[in-house]
Length: 222
Ligand code: BG6
Ligand code: MG
Image (cartoon, rainbow, N blue to C red; front, side):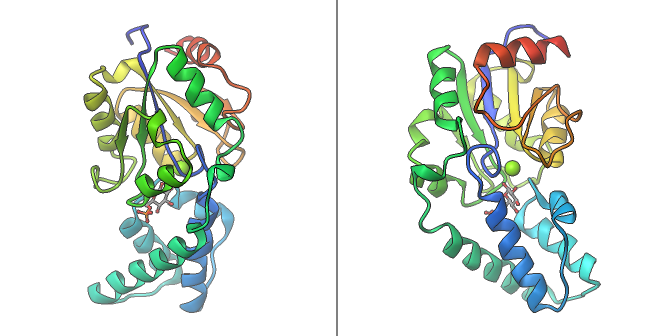
């Protein structure tokens, strides 16, 4: 891999803010209405995965078959609940260290992108007051192929005008780490639910990281 790191690409849900728990809450409410439940461990398989693919997995867990029209209705219902849960989020809902790390990244002349599977990502970064800290924003509308497909990160790199091997991706999901690897990018696993050995480097949050620590650690693995 090229040793020069030029860009950091951030997942949103679970890396910049804790919206992952609201996705789980809304999907669980839907499953409960359909008469079954699923665990936090099973929920890990939904992180980074698009709304439509998440619904497919959940229906499979519940052993439920529904019509294509009902799938659309169920996905819309889940999204309405999710939007209710997140309607009052503010900059106070940024995860510890997220804002400072984004600022330090820009200070270090490293370009920044958001790479999220969520179609709600852009209004969320606006509510969090950090939209201006990203040079490029790629959401689930711009990149319809669900992680682990590398589309979202490759589009981010292309719009930042950097090569994939010059990017570090920050991700809290297995599907997202795999997507970044499929894109030939460096990876930092974030959060306590993700196994520590899946990325090039792992941290509980962005709180105690600096751009230079990240670059040193990921390059040890290249
Ligand atoms: C990802 C989340 O960021 O976005 C997934 O990790 C979610 O849990 C996916 O399903 C799609 O989100 P949305 O907001 O488009 O339903
Ligand atoms: Mg995530």
